[in-house]
Image (cartoon, rainbow, N blue to C red; front, side):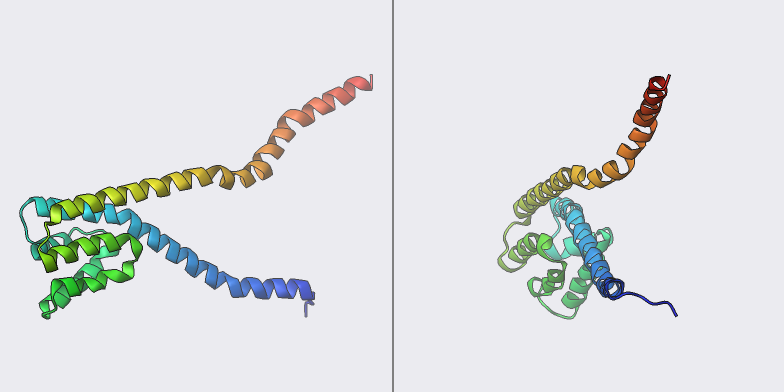
Length: 179
């Protein structure tokens, strides 16, 4: 039997406990990022359908076949609820679990369904905001990149530079001093 010290045991137990939590958080972060990226595509599809002169119900039915992956199931649920007799504005609750990036879109669709507000200008505003948010996210990721590259630089590139450039110079210098 292999003995493990208390510090190593606590470290292993902590790692085993935290690994599933960290994986689920990373998965959730990836899902949110995919939704945020796909919102602009969905809004553009909706804008095209509205520009063709379709009603809100027709727009959602048409876009369902071409919707980005994160939106397919929620849009099917909206369509199913509408077929069961739920008002479209209420059926849009199925999109709420997708989170914050979808809320302006849902609000615009609800306004069009309940109040008869023209959908095209509202979708223009939602598209502009979604693109702006996508740009901000990309800029944040670009600012974070140098910090993320610092560790590989320090651990890989600098030691390699030292081995290939500085050590040979030191060896030649030491050998010339010995003569």
